[in-house]
Image (tube, rainbow, N blue to C red; front, side):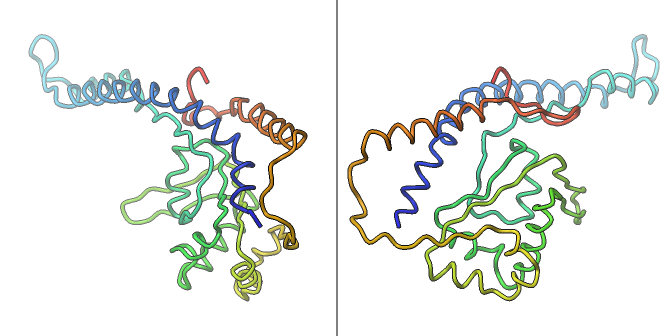
Length: 238
């Protein structure tokens, strides 16, 4: 009962955190666009250069030294995205390099996920196996044609989905998910229906509790993540 309303309240600090990070990301993106254009332009000019000062042909080693001095490609700023509702596992790993290190598969309409491509008959075992490995903190995508190796080492993934009873019962009775072991890694709850009026005005202590929850979660989210050397930088000045 009222799962969407409850989820909206619970997700309030996430939405406020994203809203606060949006202008920081926008500024970082502008800076990145200028940096990448300057970096590409300098690199292209060095690569196209045929002659050194004085008219002599420039050696390969000389151009390499200039390319090294130009530095590595500027990193794309982290996109302030902390949740996703219905991803494919392949896209999740491929795109996660652009997101913060902690991500949640969260939806108050879980049917949109289990009714999507990742949960089709052909993909269900692959999805279940990926989530089982994710439970152990392993995120990787083997190389594909024209695609390098993708790994999300150092990431954390959580999953919180809400279902209507009919859909939920079908999910927890799925023999493939049972055999794969995914369901044993998920905490399943089934609250009793509320036989009372679904809406009433909240009392003061309830509003205070919601506000405390929001501020407490925000205080956690505002702690900058520790980024390992060589990974994408976090939000500047965040």
